[in-house]
Image 1 (cartoon, helix red, strand yellow):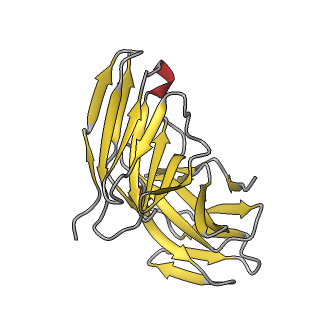
Image 2: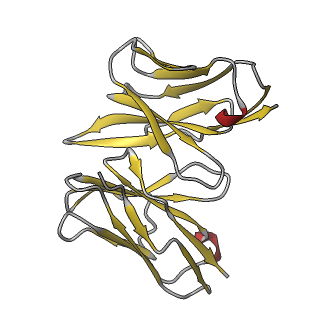
Length: 108
Length: 113
């Protein structure tokens, strides 16, 4: 069984630029989560999808972050514009239990 | 709102000593999951507990779910250097027609050889 795929693995941008992350969950998994994990902290849930519907986005900074899962399969997370404090690893999880390798974002 | 508290935040042990981390929820959980995250890695799922009072073992790891389904513990017997990492609990609870997952802040375990 293929795991959760994420890309890119690393991204360096300057503040005020835009960035997008992609996640392809395990086939057949309806639930998909995006987490932000700042160095030394636990994962913070940004958004939870059930198929293509949003279950919980209460901690998503909606003024700059957006996420979609149009066909209920893969998902993208976008930050526009990025701030220095957005530097973190962005983790995608399938069914909540299966994590991708993450995208390490550095905002300069 | 719902919270999952995890203690201790850090634990430093000598190899061979035991280690325990505890999770407490402000609300009754549907289930609780435990994860291990090595430095530089992503969380890796260890186990899910569903039943009240459930106890599960994985080699030197023992997981317990409280009778009220509000607390849980992970106990490692005779720690090894390979046990180093941060252990997270994540509690799942019903929210309307959906399930929500709340994470604890984790317990970082350091093991001296």
